[in-house]
View: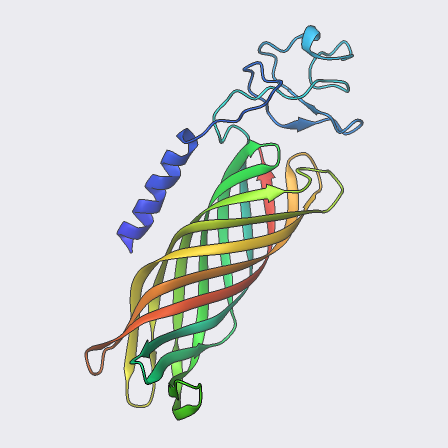
Length: 280
């Protein structure tokens, strides 16, 4: 677990050096991301190299007032940074392993109750409509039952057994996401965004039936898709709600009672989050 978290923290530290922000009107001056309320034009609030000549029609105060040109953008990827905090509903739709032998398919799995999730993300604007972020999320779901089923090649059920179970599966995901905004930072107006991410998932937990105890302590490659609605309430604060699908395919489950592995379990999580995003 410690190695898993450490590896993602190293990735987070390395990401700011990966890319750069490119814009046609760049003159190499960092842009703080200010937005003029009257005209909604994006203006540099820093003085370095952006004087009266670069401010088309700016008043006596210089840059940062109505009429400023497009913001210069010559800094690294995460020059315009943000932090978001979120939480909400987490449903594990699938937590099972499937094994086929050519004549039948055997399914072993656990049914999990709806749970909760919480997390944070740090990121920055890459170009006008694209941003990237590193996200860490914790999810918790209780186990309600353990089941075993067998189907023939035509899909008919040959055998089924279900036992009540009790326990909790905790999962920790670290993802690198790319997100496309349809209207970045349109203050006072809701706007759709879409994205996806790649990363890793670590699951840790246990559950018991009347006769057997199962352990889950394993990590897996993970992927996700997300869609949300963003509502900027000011230049620096945004509210948002979003849906996320998170999938992983190789979480090993073991029977502690009989000291055997049940194989790799698939993990499909559907999430609905509410969040706040704070920009520098």
